[in-house]
Image 1 (cartoon, rainbow over the protein chains, first blue to last red):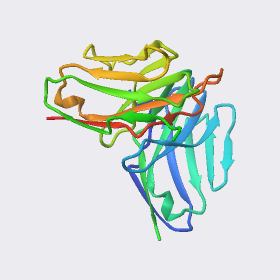
Image 2: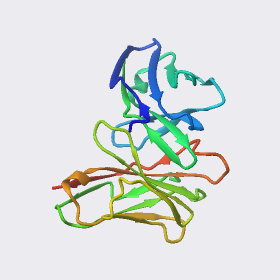
Image 3: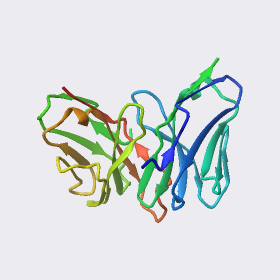
Length: 110
Length: 116
């Protein structure tokens, strides 16, 4: 059962433009939603999170939006930079368990 | 380097052999997790320790898999009688103590297992 879904395997964006990565979830019991970034041959690294009681969290160029009624969250990166090219995992956390989506590979073209 | 350390980085083994991986979490982190990641998928939860106690195991963790964290510090993951389907990246993560749920995990670089 896929509780966290990222339906876009890849996304290509021009440098300087906005990148929007999307994620859907099925379980309303999650406490936190997170985005992790992964480069090749490295483990995922935490990027930004949002509590289930909020609808927006911003950190520099990164903003996460949560729409609880639609069970949908998105990550906005503005402006996108070539160094942002990586795989982005959406994740949902409850107690000690974090469930990850399959990831979206972002390509930022210079 | 005070990050999560995993050894070895790569392991190639023949089907039927046993393998053991080690994870050293960030020193003040009492929570430790093992995940498995296959190509094109996100990390899948395997098991969770709080200090030395193994509090949760995924049904993905068959009886050929065993994990330990004997002194609440480093952890080992052993796979007995490996199968080709065990080929994957095995990721370890840790998180600090506190009452919050998994707000943030710190991952190691993983051990890439190839079973021939």
